[in-house]
Length: 140
Image (cartoon, rainbow, N blue to C red; front, side, top):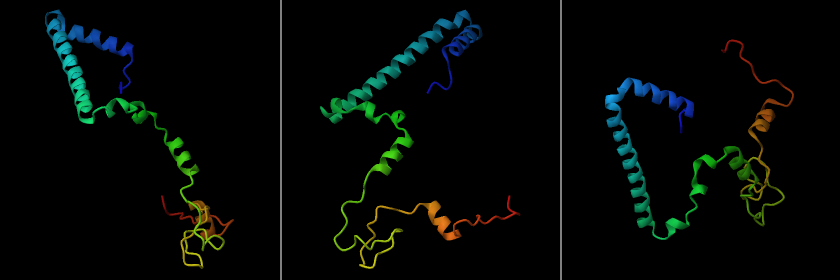
């Protein structure tokens, strides 16, 4: 999260800050910045040490890169979820007569067909294939 700050922009901001602060107060502000960075680093290390104490030896076994939210690609996650076969083997009584839309087959059990009608297909079936979608000319 650099907020669009490139090294060039940071240098320009630093030069402007030097002119605004002036040479008299600059060493004091530089020391405050150094203390703030040290305290932030100390807090981060303290949190890491506390996690290591609470989790025990499992802390070193955790693959932290795997938990990085930046590496997740929603398209890949959806693709993998769609490729998975969540339905196990079909129950004995309802294999051949299963309907598509989650309706119960004649045998009384749940539908076991792997094919699920998409929302687009449902809309087409409802409207009738080849017919245009309803249009309201007064709507904006």
